Length: 307
Image (cartoon, rainbow, N blue to C red; front, side):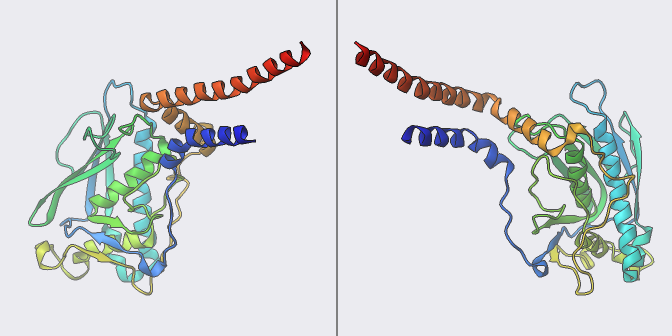
């Protein structure tokens, strides 16, 4: 019996790295406590032109990444439109829209620039999405979004991952910070192979706060006079909910991104990572030794009894 317990314990330890990588603890949280950070910066215009620059002749590029990011842009446009339809007090947001343009070379004259890299631009970072804004007097001049095809550990993103990460970074480009709610797209931690994410009423309400100048003023005026870095929560008349995704912007479900298959693929990538593979081999050797030694003892005892 102790031998079987030891085998179970060693198998459990073997798969512990994969489990700890893929599982996030989710704590119960009241909807009244959901908050979203506001960066204290804003655009002085509502029609935002987005340039998506695809890489040329690189082995890691997956064309589905472009479609995933275009769907993320469409998902934000639809969520803002749905928010306006449901809450007429924020009708001024109907003028806010992102217009995407795709190119295989860099161009100027755009508001938001999106590009892809093989891994994070920071060698010691595991960030798979990064947004940086160029500002003047807290007004956004333009911003850059970098999306990684792989984590720094070599794990690949699929189309759903890319759309989820693009949704998050586009939220930053609007002037949003992070949410404290683990299921919100603006939550700062992401687990690979997550299901498609949805934009919440809290996310779009945050956008409405950033673009509030469109409601009361004919023209934009300095941000520092009215918008401060802060946290916001939804007003009492706006309950937390997610906006549905249109069929046009929904992530396609294929065998390749089946959650079960992707989980097995991710576990295999983790287990065969050079830093982990040596540990796996040692465990396998130990298991073989544990299984062989008792068998030899039994054969020896049997041989002694016969003689």
